[in-house]
Image (cartoon, rainbow, N blue to C red; front, top):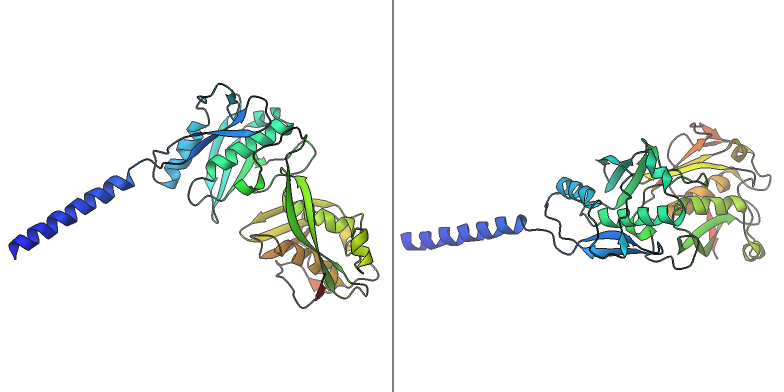
Amino acid sequence: MKKYCFWFVLCLSLLLIGCHKKVNEPVAGTKLYYINKDETAIVSESYDLKSTDRKGQIEEFLKALSIEPQNSDYKLAKPKDITLLGYNFGGAGQLQLGFDINYKNVTGISEVLMRAAIVKTFTQIEGITYVEFLVNGLPLVLDDGSWVDMMSADHFIDNVGDFTSYSQVDQVSLFYANETGDGLLESVRRIEYDGSIPIEQIIVEQLIAGPIDVELQAGMQATIPQNTVLNKISKKDGICTVDLSSEFLNKLPKVTEATTIYSIVNTLISEENIDRVQFLINGEVTNLYRKIAIDQPLERNLDIIKSEK
């Protein structure tokens, strides 16, 4: 009996030692992302993370952003004059990276490629799905006035070629009013857009612009006054916050209140990782849109969808 106990203890000890060794081994298969010399694509070199916990891996990648590539045709994703001030890790796989004001010195395709390389680097870490950039403590705003929301690796393609914008293609569902204005019709569009702009911003702007010819022929009509301005849109913890100008409150005569509200809500919730929609008017919570309470986040309304086209 003592003999069997001895061998059992020995095997268990060897197993524990083996497991302990595995936990402390570098994480193979990860990469450091760079920008090619012509600034038309992001490129990568193999890099094995030595840290095994999330905090350690984040900090290791932060230091690695300054590691010069082995390939002389590659450039650092983050120029050396830009300082990374720190980071915060939130729920739902969200990582915030804070940069100093020198970030604003990088513009156009160079900025998009830098952002793509950094996002693709950090989203390799288990538990990090989205990355948000802050500049001088504020959310990143591009030169055209558009703001940049949480980004995943899927927000970016790997090559921009000869294009002047960092484009990608997505299929989206837009909900417009039916002919009587008391229900919604679904239109599925395939849109190409600048990958530096959140898809949520694109689809709300499409709703404001109204139906295109083929949708008008199918009996669809606009649900939002065309002079409405989308002030800001953001997404966090499953809630998409839509900040619209006061023109939104000018109800269209042939469209019910519910049709207008749920054209936006149902459209946004068709997108990934959005469960509810919160409305703001010029940055402030408004209690009512006509007779509909909009002071709390709203869920999808399937009953108002009359048919799918």
